[in-house]
Structure formats: structure tokens, C-alpha cells
Length: 413
Image 1 (tube, rainbow, N blue to C red):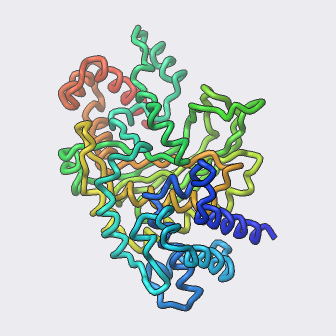
Image 2 (image 1 turned 90 degrees about the vertical axis):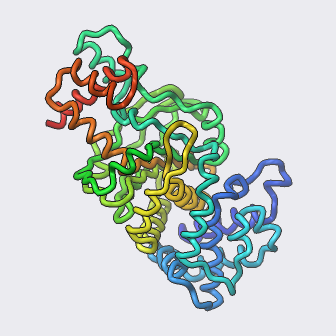
Image 3 (image 1 turned 30 degrees about the vertical axis):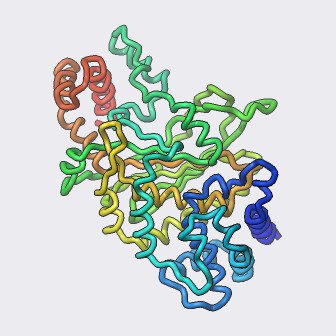
């Protein structure tokens, strides 16, 4: 019964969006708000329709259909979703999906080569996404450190400077507004062409990633604290992992620490690490099981279909951001399409808070590893001077990074 209700809700949400109910009421649906990113969602729905008509599916379509079946969707479920898409007029589909997806029909397949071509075409628009945040890779030195930990470090070293200024700047209001409206965001560590060139052929080695702290920028303003939980899916282009957190009672402005966990503990031979973090209301935690299963399966399908060579190739093409750094925009376009598809299919506005993706290119992690090696065994003053010259930054910025990196190096020793 629960499976039938899930499919029925998905079909109702899709039919409502295709009918234009949101447009008429003045409140755009999630499908409409994410139109430019809904390519993969359209491809999936068309594949479901083609499968129900017994059309010859492409390799990508077959993999997507089998992926949904693997996590419990039946032929009848997929046929219902595909029919809702196929029976809608072109005008309705064009309101929800980019033209390439809207014009697909049961006689038109969509292949992996088509996906690669579309990602390349979408890449230049990625840097204009209002829900994209590009981070300075120097801030990686401070990732996972709470304000309390930074201030303890300040006390240990007996310095006067406020170390909290070393934290990444808070996200801007335009970014937060877009994140609220679309239901998701992407953060990417920017890299330079020189860093990318230096990373070619370099060995990153073993990487460990953990979820440490979470900060609440905005609460629901309901009575009492919110009690969200978070689902993490991590992928390097070859394999993937998942982790679901405990429930965290928090309100606007609160910072919480996750229980001990490991999101990733392996090599990263691909183009970098992609993190997808979902936030859900705790009182609806049973809804997340199917969502994370579908997310993991879609990622697996795309990993298999695109191959590691494609991921590596996409990571080598930078588009300038106007900040002196670049981002592998094709990879971000791919994950934006995945997130939009998951949101459109499975998220329920009553229990779903948002999806927050992050991409850390291999070049950024290799550059950080190089910084560790540069200051290994050096005093803080020596390390500060080295980092000033190497990163071309001021004394205070270099000193803060030197202190945190040296502290982390001692913790890892």
C-alpha cells in the first residue's frame, strides 16, 4: 500500500505541474522552478513511456528503467509516470522541461552520447546559476571546524586575532533565496588552470571525509525547534557511499555536531568528490528510504554509463567564474540534472527541506595536500612565509591557514 501511495503521489504531482495549476495559482511548482535543469527528469519519463510501448530503448534508457525497478518500482508504476508525460501536450511539457527533453516522444530515444552533448551545451550557463556558490579552495583548511574549535585554537596559541574571520564568508542572500525557491543548491571549490595542470598525473592518495558540523541559516519558524536529519551520498565517478544522520534538534542560528561518522575512506581516482546532502523533517524519516535508494541507483547508472574516462574528461574543462578561478561546469550540470530529477519525482513539500550538493575537484584536494607537504616540520612563522609566497595572500590569511593546517597535521599524525 505504501508503494502504491508513493507512485500515486508522484503521478499527481506531475499531472498537477503539467496541467499548469501552479502557474494559474501564481505559485510555480517545483518542476517549473527547475525547468532549465529538468533534462534528466524528462529523459527518464520518456524512457518509462517508451518502455510501456515496448519501444527499443537506448542503453541509458534501459539502465534508468532497470534502476527504478531495482528499488521497487513496478512496470505499472513506470507506465503511469510515463503516460502522464507522454499524454501531455508539447506546450505543457515545454513549461516544465528544456526543449531537448520536452520534444522527446515514444519514438525518440536518448543515448549516453546525447547526454554528453547536452552537458557540454549546458556548461556555459552553469556559472550564471544563482544557487551556485563557488568557494575559495583555501577555505578547505577550515572545513569542519566550528567557531568553538577555532577559538580553542586561538587560546592554545596565545594569539589576539579572531580566528573566526578565517571561516568561509556566509552565503549571500541572493544565493539563499535561490536555494529556497529551487529547493537545492550546489557549492563548488574553484581551481585555477595552473592547479589543474599541476594535478594531471599527480597521485592524490587516500582521502577521508566526514560530516562534522551543520549550521542552520533559517528555521521554519514553527513552535519549538526543528528536528531535521540529513542523508549523505558521496560519489567519485566510480563508486558511491551513503550515510543517514541522527535527528538534530536545532533552530535558526544554531550549530550542531554530527555523531562520529565516515562518509568516504578510499582513493579518489576520478575527477573529484561529489557530495549530495538531503535535509528532511524527522517526523517523516520513513520517506527518505526510497529517496536515497533512487538517488544512489541513478548515480550508479550514470557512473556506469558515462565511465570514469568521461568523468575525468569533464573535470579537465574549466569555465571561468569571474573570481580568478574556474569550475568543471559539465560535472555540475550533470549533478544539477540529477538533483532536479530526484526533487521532481520524489520530494514531498511537507517533509522535504532541501538538497545541498558540493563538488571538490581532484585538483583542489591535490593542492591542499601540497600545502600540507610544504609546511610539514616548519614553525608557524616559517609556514606563514611559505604560504604567503605560494598562495600570494596577506600575512594574516597565511598565518591563519598555517596554524590550522599544522594543527590538522598533528591530529592526523
